[in-house]
Image 1 (cartoon, rainbow, N blue to C red):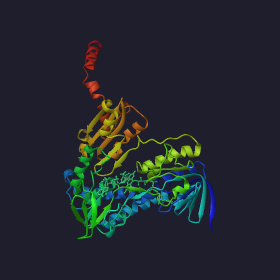
Image 2: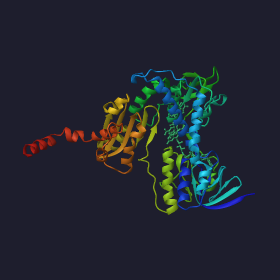
Image 3: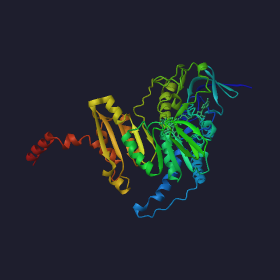
Image 4: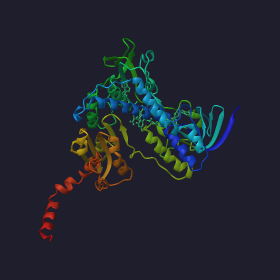
Length: 471
Ligand SMILES: Cc1cc2nc3c(=O)[nH]c(=O)nc-3n(C[C@H](O)[C@H](O)[C@H](O)COP(=O)(O)OP(=O)(O)OC[C@H]3O[C@@H](n4cnc5c(N)ncnc54)[C@H](O)[C@@H]3O)c2cc1C
Ligand SMILES: NC(=O)c1ccc[n+]([C@@H]2O[C@H](COP(=O)([O-])OP(=O)(O)OC[C@H]3O[C@@H](n4cnc5c(N)ncnc54)[C@H](O)[C@@H]3O)[C@@H](O)[C@H]2O)c1
């Protein structure tokens, strides 16, 4: 028997985006229905950010055991139990899961339906036996691993981010197809756990980041034992001697396990978007207020393509809550969205890279640089390999790139500055506690004033003159 529900807001997908809308909307007084077909928490909690960062943490501990001699502590070969590492990963997911659970959201007053939703008209969605009619819908159905039609791939057992965290048998040699953030984070984590790893990448590794910074990260990743084959476009996979991947130019790599990490595809297959009047190609088209071609329907997060990060999905949620609940105009922006690849060292970016800023701003661009070897805390940690670049236009930072220990934390002052349109002086006015790594962010900003104050004849003449007459 079919049940009908009328509500203010109906959200499809309980990942980072959908959960943020649900929690915000219900706590501000809207009637909310949340439809989730898979696991509460979506990709980030179950197959993405959380398990990958938990694996990286395990890899970090193993690496520290093997690299302590410089601190006067004998190196030991880590005894890694891969299945126990996976228990740790599952434990971390389980500890966060209650926060995203059906119970917590029902406790807030959200009606949760655990099934996949499909539009049956312009203002109705069916999920199982329930039809939901809503004033506004939010599509937050995320993305799935893209598995390209590579010849022979279907003849071998391969993993994606949806299965690799459940693998408990230690791979002897893991081949990773794709040198994007998923590939590189998991490559280094596995190598540090003592597993032989080869990354095969069709073009260049981490192509969206500044190549000068990527080179610094890659030196360390290679030093951890990861073999990286660039310009290796996988054209065929065969099952001779385990698994062999073949490039389009005749190279081959043979291994025991295969992880495919070559990008994402938007989860739109089950939605029947044409019936809802929602325009789409491979992802959902939205305007600058995140509305689809059906004005009652918004789309947020990975399903819209573009920047595919948890914090972007949550940010989108904030943008639409304003227009959906209060009827106020609300526009999305992306110039202040950072991203971090959690390799060691981390690579962090906000705004344009140096090359992109050069194209956009030409002569108006100033690039400030500061290296980690000038930071005392980095010296104490023996982590002096690192670089920050800040792209400045008319006295304001428009972008920043950092590679180095905890770059993802260090970029935050620039995230604050760019989000609020602050001048570079806002960073130099900051007094950083000594000795902290974050001092590099202030010292980089300080480079803006170095030529203006210390290499300036006019300043020198004024100081000389004032000194003559000062009592
Ligand atoms: C390995 C990996 C590591 C990552 N690491 C990071 C990181 O460190 N930092 C970062 O910011 N981002 C990271 N990401 C990206 C991040 O996971 C995504 O950007 C984020 O999860 C997107 O959130 P979302 O709400 O758009 O979609 P999702 O989290 O994918 O949630 C969508 C939900 O919708 C459900 N659904 C789909 N179709 C329907 C339907 N028809 N009806 C009902 N429900 C449906 C799905 O089951 C899913 O639960 C990582 C991704 C991967 C794969
Ligand atoms: N730290 C983070 O924030 C984080 C971590 C992981 C994932 N993510 C998100 O997930 C998204 C997807 O990550 P991803 O690494 O799967 O995708 P990606 O698109 O960033 O990288 C995929 C790589 O695979 C390569 N490739 C494609 N086909 C190939 C082939 N046949 N042979 C060899 N190489 C091939 C591409 O050249 C590309 O460099 C990211 O763009 C990001 O938005 C974020």
